[in-house]
Length: 408
Ligand SMILES: Nc1ncnc2c1ncn2[C@@H]1O[C@H](COP(=O)(O)O)[C@@H](OP(=O)(O)O)[C@H]1O
Ligand SMILES: [Mg+2]
Ligand SMILES: [Mg+2]
Ligand SMILES: [Mg+2]
View 1 (cartoon, rainbow, N blue to C red):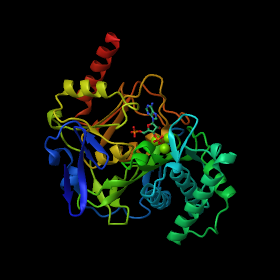
View 2: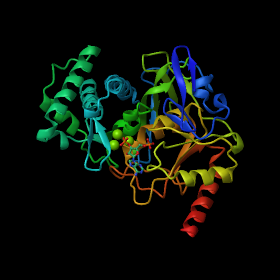
View 3: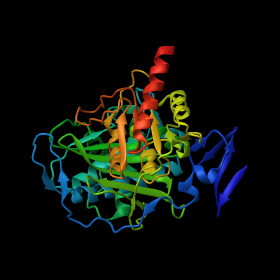
View 4: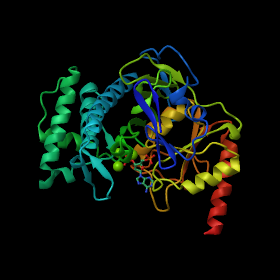
């Protein structure tokens, strides 16, 4: 079966589940209610974009007196970098060849687009912010790419990066060599930490979704003295709610709200998380990949809360973006035992949701601490919702975890 809007088939039924541009749910029930971001106007208000040079509060963990500081210049550079990277990724996803997929030592798929995106973001930030100290904590490194068997891949990545820069035309970098690209990728080796400013980059979050042709995100955050102060999420396959056009750019700066605009540059719209207070009306997001999050635990939490809708499974931090504009009310993430979450999988998404009025904590109700280096130190999992629903959600999470551990 397929359902179309215009020429674009949006839904196809795949083995008893609905598959909507990467979103799989378990039963064909009230599609328009469950996917407001595709089928109807979302709950956001149009607003003027934040003025340039607006002073925002900067919270410093090392000083009790808060100073005022704007991150407008970093935000503009981050938006430009993420938009360009998403152009590169879209090109690769369209023509994704099996040879573009490599296996890193941890066996996760990594594509030419992951490397190309990281190189581009690193180069664009450096070029746009020459007077700022540069430190980047990013997922990929060049070790595998420097091997003899990766010669062709490196050539392809260098070509893609050069083509993307040339297509933009505003960044004055003469054609880059393969070594320039390797160096740009390795600029992401910073350890982050509680002092100074550090960019935090996931060049493609949701690589598995990307390879499947589904959702993914380019996620870029900025830490200042251990706190996230801005976040940009480019989600090339997520439809803009109002007109079903695909390609969203979410961005947020501390104390300045969250905005979304289309990746091709529509005026920004201010967004807010869902105001639902009754869990029966809430829907929840979780990873598409069962290996990334315990689906049975989410389902027991949802049952306890009285959530009626089945889970919306979607790859990447597009979940945080969708939540920030009220597409769903809850995001549950419970990695299998022993998995350590990385800061680049959450920094940008956290900021986008927090500035849209949402709350992000670990399963113990503690705020996420991005100051500890490349990893997050967590109690069990990550939960996200609005302020009204959080107390009931936290109780359901803790009860379910307790029941699960006593039954193991
Ligand atoms: N076993 C595991 N448990 C939890 N998360 C995992 C995991 N293996 C990989 N991941 C992380 O899950 C991210 C994708 O999240 P999601 O499931 O929300 O799409 C991956 O990001 P990358 O795709 O950037 O590697 C990866 O960092
Ligand atoms: Mg990865
Ligand atoms: Mg990731
Ligand atoms: Mg990644």
